[in-house]
Image (cartoon, rainbow, N blue to C red):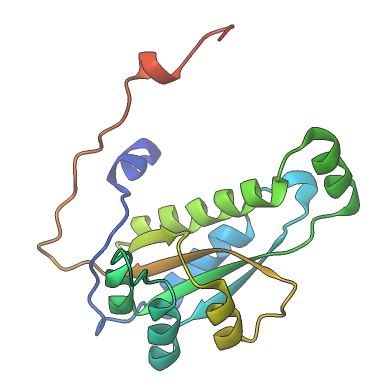
Length: 182
């Protein structure tokens, strides 16, 4: 598939077939695509926790739901979650982050996350990045040390056949692209 076609096709999928697990070779490609992602100073400030045990995946998925506003109800249908832990970057990246007031590890996990989602899409698997979750509950469920930070949770799964590709509604090129000056 042409890369731009892949980008046009990739969307956040919010319905999965729970009974259809993701094949090991496809999971391996998803994780490998993130492992190979670029990062500031090649720090690779991440750990990926693959959650594919059904009961545990349900509990982690439940920790992404917002009870007051009904957010992320679909995640419990996902047969696979990947929890992204932010690790400390190399010391010179930490210094650069302070000097430039940039959160390089956040940028880095964003790149790795999108690599995973694009690889999943290439293999016919839907995905959705989740920023809303109960971090304390997820840390407890997955034995994540207290001082670590959960950056993202990504749900993966096969969408039902009737799941429709939505039209991408984006700002026009003229609204978001400038040449040589703001």
